[in-house]
Length: 390
Image 1 (cartoon, rainbow, N blue to C red):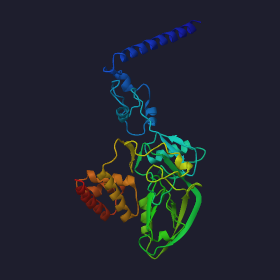
Image 2 (cartoon, rainbow, N blue to C red; image 1 turned 60 degrees about the horizontal axis):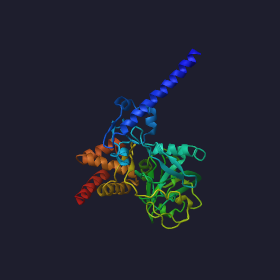
Image 3 (tube, rainbow, N blue to C red; image 1 turned 90 degrees about the horizontal axis):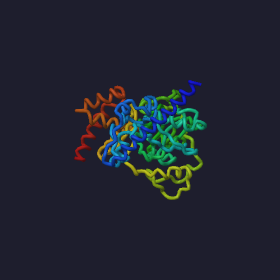
Image 4 (tube, helix red, strand yellow; image 1 turned 135 degrees about the vertical axis):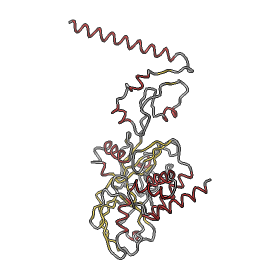
């Protein structure tokens, strides 16, 4: 009986202490908008509301580890709090949430807590546990339309706006084996990849060798070349393999199509977002609430690491530079990769000369991955472009 009475006494005492603490807090808040409420520094440092594991799970980008030590009512707005990575004043990180849908048709779901494309695919697989056996089934994602455009202009690449709607394209069971006679050194094929081992066709040049093969489509995953598996390869490795095939020789490719919906022949949206009219497409309609360009905040996916938050869109020069690099990569290597182009531009910006630029690329990607003539051509073209923006 004594122990029960002690327990009851402890509970009552705890409630009284809690009431006292709350009363003290409200008194501070009533002092006026101009006064600052200072959190207990020890509580801020120790982060009582989230342990380290929870914070790591909830973080999507590299937010500050501690909450601000002061909060001024009426002085901070949502943007300043968000920029510090804080949802409120107690050190809780803001969750970034995106709407997703399987491109061939599914319910709309939400994904969050990802710092890279690989983690995005993992979150999608978890959200669609009944439809997706594993993240390895995901080929790529498009933004704001489920349709695979002619050159995959709507492909999720190096950057995603916080208002973008994500469509997830899965591998189908349709496999095609095509035999190609390499009559010319240029096949007319541009390759990209999803960053986690799935290389696929991004562009087919009109009038090229590949364009004459009706079975080869934009979006097809290149699963093997001459019966050698290319699963797990980067785009530049697949492109190098194709370039190494001698002119005049035949070779084979095994291709895997993405899953398609019954609405694929309906007119897609125009540009990024806004409707091209009343398409009647229930898949595209799912993303209507995510108007593009409503905000400047975006997430940049780095080719070699985690994502990072960007508060503003890149300048006109940066966007032009990244497009120029992508064009040069396509010309010299037969690949396009916006995340890689963004990283290459960063290397160029930080390099003192062309030699240091080349060394940085070799250290990042591997020696010789990008040909020397391509590196020096990119360096020269970027210098000329920069002079035009001065």
